[in-house]
Amino acid sequence: MTRTNTTTRRTSLALLALGLVAGLTQATLARDIVVPVDFQTIGEAIEAAEEHDTILLKSGRYDETIDVTRKSLQIVGGGNSPLETTILCNDRLHTVSAWRNDYKVKFQNLTFLKEDPEVDGSIRIDRTLVEFRECHFIGLGNRGGCHWGRGGRFSSGAMYLDRAEVGVIDCHFMANTAETTCDRLAMAGGGAIYASHTDLWVIRSTFMGNVVRAAATGGQPVNEDDYAEGGAISCFRGSLQIQDSTFRENRAWNTGRQRQFGTAHGGAIHAWDSSPLLIEGTTFAGNHAQWDEESVRAGATCSGGAVWIHANGQVLAGNTFINNSSSQLAGAVYSSDNSVVTDSRFECNLPDHLDGWYREQNNLFLECPPPCPADLDGNGTVDFSDYMLLVQSWGLADGSPADLNDDGLVNYTDLLLMLDAWGGC
Image (cartoon, rainbow, N blue to C red; front, side, top):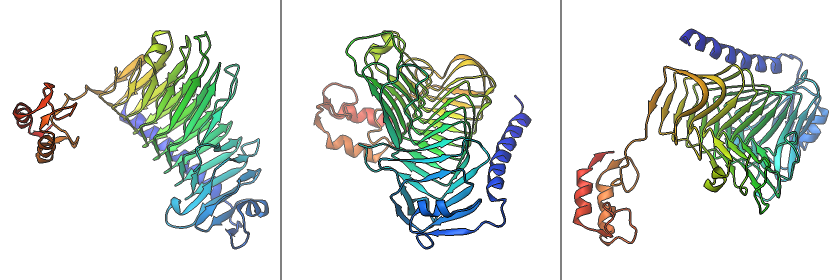
């Protein structure tokens, strides 16, 4: 793969994003509607808005359901930060729908927040072109029930996208959850975003601490599927393009009973039949695909600690994968359909970096650094602060990490080991 091709892909993605913005700002006769000045609620402003109007929200908290149907408009938060204008999602489903992609909606400088973990709250987009720019999504998610076939709808986290075109630019997704608990078949996908037959672009965005969890509660192993797919993003068909983004500490987690065919795939991203698929210039750190050892031994599969992909035309270029893990296969990337992985850095992904069917070139593979037990405070250096922690633990160890030789005592032997390791780990 040449650098020219990589540059071309980056340019194409940028043009797509710019086109999304241009389509939303082309009308010159649009007006500004201020809430709560011109109207008391967002709903009233949406109902009164005409094509390409902008609804400006004064800083504050808005506890109402947003429903945009067959209109092109912008909803923009006031203040200097998205955190100053919050749309609450407690027990609410915000919707944007048109049933054809002729309508364009933009959200900017807003926070979507669910404060109550005991209720659902999320966003659904159907057959509409939507852009989210400089928005935060915090604590959103749904707890689904039972599904009796793969065609059943996944439980999703912050967003459920169906046959839409969606751009996510300079946004943050934090602690969103898609969770399904069922006595037989538990299915959940996309802790932050689940996209079905959707073209999804993600640019300069952060996904942190999002979780997808499937839990079958029945008491006996059975030959049925449980799915926990895509701790941050799960895509089914459509296309997926991600550029210059960050995925940290996301998790695909299956906590059901023993399952012969269950899965936990894609700690950060799961993509099935999404083409084209391009992930470029993105960092994946500390993501996990997790299932208990007993279920893995029983025949369940768990792979792709950061990314799991199955599609034609997959390209992963110029990415960084650090400290991702899977309970079974491919701590970083699992590909089931001959993807191209190039110009990327892989470091300390467990149990291995890559698995499946793929072509790789110009990648750097680094194993985990040796342990540094004398670095008691975990700052990457053995120094005076570690010495003070050792002195405070002097005597009987009682499981203290300062017992560097595991002899049950913290004494001069441990001190000598610390001095021998003095400096950077």
